[in-house]
Length: 117
Image (cartoon, rainbow, N blue to C red; front, side, top):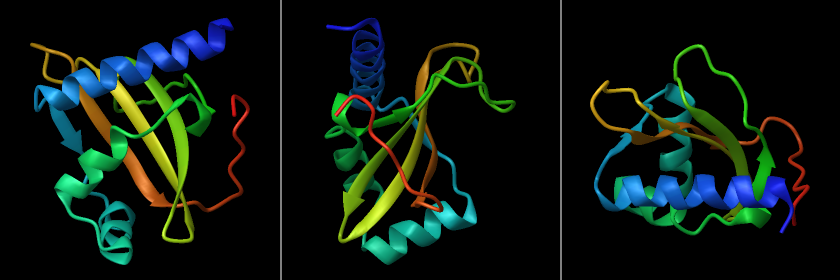
């Protein structure tokens, strides 16, 4: 397994571990909320979908973000005929424990590539 694949796999395992412990934050930006409505998703559907992400869904990262410390990765997934851009973080946002954060969940504004697929 390449180092990049290992890094993405480790990120997803950590993210899902936080989800299982209910250490999760969904950033309620207008386009994120609109995408949930467009796709007919609720909070539980979103969490369930995030647990299905794999190395093959990886788009880019890790990257820096001014609002969140920690590891940030971008994924994509085709949902109901739409390519969805998904930016996730494992971050120490609370200062107490690490949490999983869904920073972006919206219809892709540009073509997504999947270099590890």
